[in-house]
Each structure stands twice: as structure tokens, then as C-alpha cells.
Image (cartoon, rainbow over all chains, first blue to last red):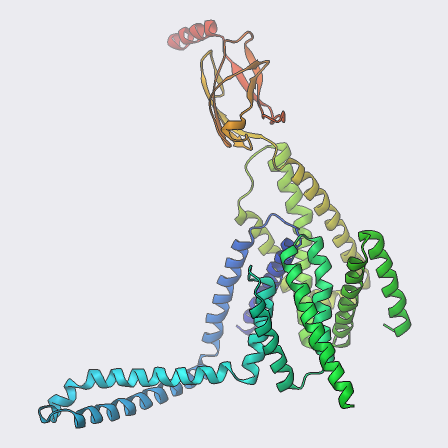
Length: 227
Length: 248
């Protein structure tokens, strides 16, 4: 079974690379007469099979983790619901004091428990998003999205993303040559994008090359002053 | 690359870029791109013995080889069949994809990297194969782009008829109705009843010759489609034919 699993993984990797190769070729105007949307759907389907197979293979190690997580969540939820139920009963008229009253306020207690869980999740999200790593990933994704995905161009967005990059540079103590390297990467992309008639993307790549160059030169200047 | 070698090669790339694009900005971009790719290749070469790079190289090789064989076999065969020999609609997307998938499956199961490391003469065969497939792809692309928008007749009904017979001609690239052309039967022009990109309905005129003649579409820009054989029947002989059938 392990042999089949390895073979399947190799096949899936090769199909994905083939799709990537064809997609890159299409970007530069080379078509091989292959329907890339169909190929992408095939890759997704094969990836789905890989995922299910992987879960099935590692079920013995996945199941205890999942079980532990659900049991913990269930216990926490149960404790919160019971506490909420007791509080609601305590603040209610005496008629709701008995067992029947407790049962009557149970839906309300469950609702309070669910909202409590959601609130906790909502509290965790900003912590993940505004962590050191979160901001770096957000900045990189934002810049790549601005260059390759979004059609519009916004000065505010460029300033905001540059701010995120500056913040990451400060937090990670990145050297000036990193920013200059990224600037050179965008600069080297421009002529090829222009040759292949991708003018809007080339324009944005040039803007980002300039921004990174400015940041990089600033950093190098500061580094020299410190020395 | 050593420092001086890098400077000399970068200058050469810059001059080649200048010669090709005749623009300093583009030549500089080409030089930067070359240096980036070179650095990347050097980094890959440095870690060439790591299992990740080896595995990735094997998969890349499988994908490239599958694409090369596809360009060498499927594309020309499909082109010759559907555009030159038979003039038929294109093979379904699943056909090409199935062929490509089978090739990828085959090559991904073979450990190409170790074969290439063990047999040096195979490396040159691989390079030659890639060069030939690239050439074939270039020819295919050139001829496909040239012929892709030509008018083509795929089928027509009926295959024979007498005067005033209504003939339906199916195909592609006939142009829309406001740019309609002509349908020629032998040396005569047929009367057009309906015209669109993929279907023409025309009426057979009074014939001045009987027997098999060529039927083809002439688009408004003067481009002629492939010729198909249509039989113009003699009404006099049709009566005799009917009598013979009755006798039988």
C-alpha cells in the first residue's frame, strides 16, 4: 500500500507541475491546445483523493487528536452552558426555580454558550492576524495580490502595504539588502511583462520596485549611520 | 560563477539584450533576470543532493518530458487529422488531457533522475528530444494559427440532389450573416437561404452539368473552404431509376 501511496503522490506532483508549466506558458502566450480549466479541476479532484487517502492512512494518529479536541470543546461548552443556566435560573422568578424551570431556560443557556464560544474565537482571530507572522504574510499576500490580481490601483493601499512591510522589517530586523533584492526582482520582471503585453501588471511591478528600492535605500542608509 | 566571469557574462547578456530589444531598460531587465535565474540555479546546484531537490527535479523532468512527447506526437497528429487530411471538428479536450495524463503517469513512475545520472548518453538524447519537440511545437503553432480561422466544411446534407434541392452545410468560420459570402457548386453559385457562422442553408440552382462536382464556401474576404463532392442528379435518369426499382 505504501508503494501505491508514493506512486500516487509522485503522479499528483507531476500533474500539478504540468499544470503550473502550462499555466506559465499560457501567461507568456504559449498555448498547447489543452483546456487548463479542465486540467485544474482534474488536479483538484486528484488532490481531494490524495487528502482523503492521507486521512484514511493516518487515521490512527488523527483520530485521538480530533477526539481530544472535540471532547475538550464539549466539556468547556457544557460547563459554560450549565453556568449560564444556573445564572438565568437565579435571576428568574421563583416559578422557574425547579427542574421544569431549568429545562425551560436550557435553550437560552445553549444560545449563551454558543455566543460565548463564538466570542472566544473572535477574540483569538485578531491575535493571529496581528501577530508578527500574520502581518508579514498579510503584507506579502497583499503586495502579490496588488500586482497580479487586483485590476485597480490605489495609492492608499500601496502606502498601507508599504507600512506593513516596514513594520515586518522592524519586527524581524530584516537587512536593507532584502528590500533591495525584492526591488530587483520586481524590476527584472518588468521588461518581460512588457514584452508579453502585460502592461498593467508591469506598471504595478514597477511601482513596487520603486517602493522597495526606497525602503531598501533608507534601511541601508540607516545601517551605515549606525556603523 | 566567479566574480569576473559573472561580470563578463552579464555584459554579454546585456549586449545581446540591447541587440534584440534595442532598448537599454529591457536589456538591463534581461541582465537582472539572467543573474536572478543564475543565482537560483546555483542555489539548487549547491543543494543538489538533498532529497527534496532530487524529488522535485524528477517531477519537473516527468512533466517536461510528457509535454515534449505530447508536442511531438499528439499535436501534429491532431493537426494533420483535423485540419489537413479529414477536416473534422477538433478532438475533445478530454482526448488531449487523457493522452497527457497517461504520459505524466508513465514518466512519474520511472525514476528519470537516476537513469540520467547512470547513463550519460541518455542526457544528449533527452536534450535532442526537447529540441526536436520545441521545433515541432513551433511549426505546429505557426500552421495552426495560420489555418485556425479558415472556413471549413465538416458535413453537408443531402449528398446529391436535383434543381431547387435545399442543402445544409455545417462547418466553422463562415463569418456572420452581415458578412456573408458565396457557396459555389461546380462553376455555379447557389442561392443562399440562411447563413451563420456554423451553418449555411442554400438552394441548388438550375444545373448545366450533371454528375459529381465540387461544393465549397467562399467567405466575404475571398478565403475558400475545403472542397467536398456533391452529385448533381439528372431528373431524366431519376425516372428511369424509379422504374428499375419498381421492376425489382
